[in-house]
Length: 97
Image (cartoon, rainbow, N blue to C red; front, side, top):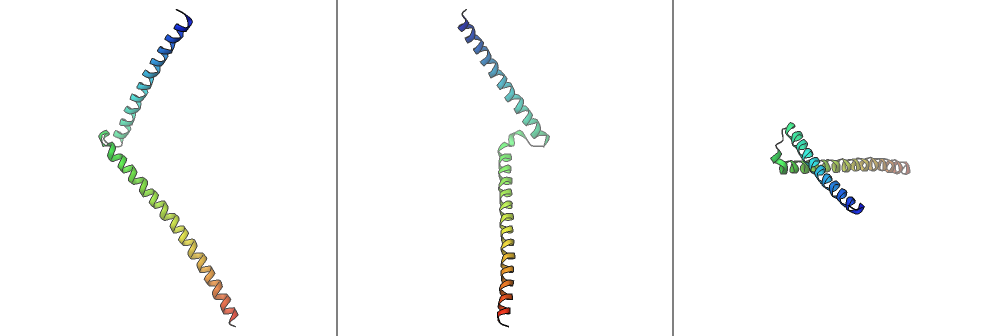
């Protein structure tokens, strides 16, 4: 065998081992995920429902964050408006004396 043929054989063997390792990793990962979901009381067949639940949670969180931001802006607006109103009232009362 020439060195090029040996190299080709080694590449094939390494590629086959890599494929086998990736398949094994995928199997172990899937078994682990099923075990975790089962430990939380979630059936493996309910994946679509779980996905919908997570999407709902994300939308709820985003809505909550939006309400927080809007509430903070409203509070700042009220404080600034009240301060300006008090200054205006004070200025007009000083000018009318």
